[in-house]
Image 1: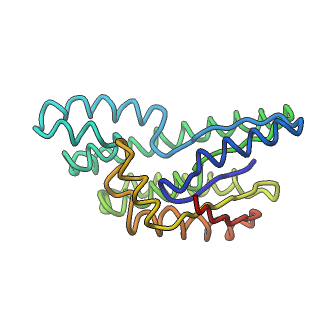
Image 2 (image 1 turned 90 degrees about the horizontal axis):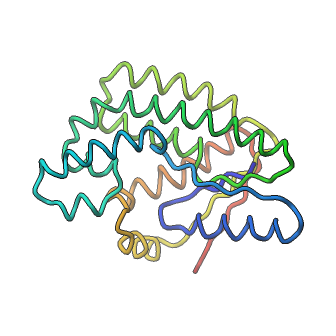
Length: 216
């Protein structure tokens, strides 16, 4: 399994698709998927709540321009903090199910390329809890549980971490051009949570690491 990590707007999706196409041209079956944090059931719940907040707050254009977690972050951070244990639990269960499917696909002979995935989800969960639900005991318990289970899933010498990087100016420009990019996608969040920490975590679990700078 190849895990493609890196900051927002670094070119992960383009790189992953290109990588998968090259494997396919060489006769290797390749399966690419984006497994970003707060997807699946958590995304559905956030979508419903965002529809509600859209009518409760006046700045409709702003809410339309952000991803679902960021909509609640702007409109009602207190509600987001209360919901985090449930959102993280739903995300955790969804990711575990997806990785079971990924392993089945691998056994069928395919190379699996996953953008973001477990490592990024865990870091995002920790970041959101520290920012919005630091005193929530349930959130902390879930983080500890998923850390242990995720560690067992991804500690595998056959996993490869590819960490992408593009200079800050180009990433910021791309992020601004994206209508669905959260406002916290630049700065500390991008440089630490989506770049430095994934690189450190890949080293910690002894996965093979490839660091690529995309100056495109």
